[in-house]
Length: 198
Length: 114
View 1 (cartoon, each protein chain N blue to C red):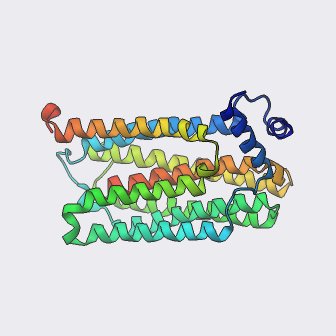
View 2: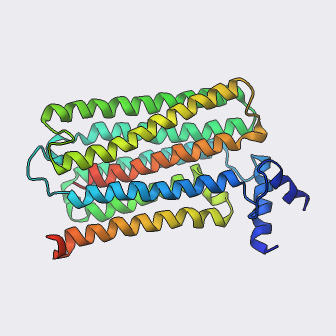
């Protein structure tokens, strides 16, 4: 029972024995699955039905997208290493890994926006075809999530630098990590369904 | 108090230790390397013309494997109480059903011009 009391201490009353914050965040992630599910459904429904070009096979550069995908995958690795460092009380390592997460998120966004500019040059805009609309809304929503994640990481760096996140409060970094990994998972799905299965 | 709640409380208490049950940094690096290699295999399948007939199912399976690796080891769901797996799976199953049903309706069955 002493262990149970310890479990309740930092998280307020909990009937499940799990931190309320963590249960709430996993529920949020489950709802985000449905949110992205609707956007992916829309893209899939319109797939191959655009009556005007440019078409996916004409403009997608799979090699460039593979590189940006790999960068995002490694940002997830940096995130989990940041959490590991916080749990071990290694403040400098934690800050370094979180900076790496932000940097890799920035590289991913830079490469993706560069692709957007290329697609726009080809004539693919938000209103040019059903492919354009569903593609930009799906991938654009994902990029907004990446930006929010980067802001969250910057806040964590500030808090860690001010000694506000000791190992006992590592759950704050763990929750941010859950968000970042989820953003990574969504991109894994988008990469396969949008870019590879054309 | 049910057995489940007791197990969850124990897991929550262990979580306060913050390193118990979590893997080493080297293990996470290996998972990252595996994810990168699987991505490379996916792209190879995309470019190899002989793989065209099997491309879609293979890519879906490999992509699912990557998602499972991230969820189990980077998101630590493997080490969390079972309750959180059910919460997450509820969203994943519903979303997968929705996407699959719409793809079947619009691209396989002739209902909506598929």
